[in-house]
Image 1 (cartoon, one colour):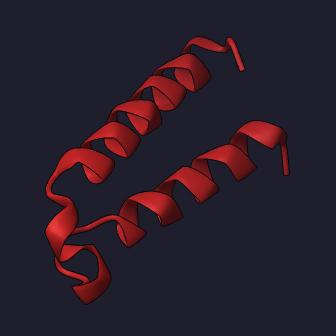
Image 2: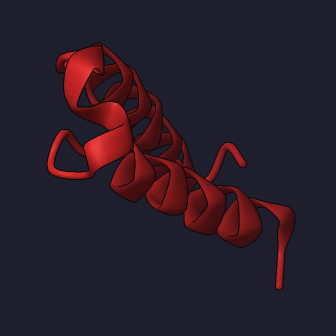
Length: 52
């Protein structure tokens, strides 16, 4: 596995953990999942462009 694949897997797991449906993250709002989602999209675009 390359470092980019590991990074994407970790970001997906963080995104799932930040979803508002979980009891521990209800009061957080949409901030954490939105930020992680944007980071995930940027990493995916860089991966598709071959920069990572």
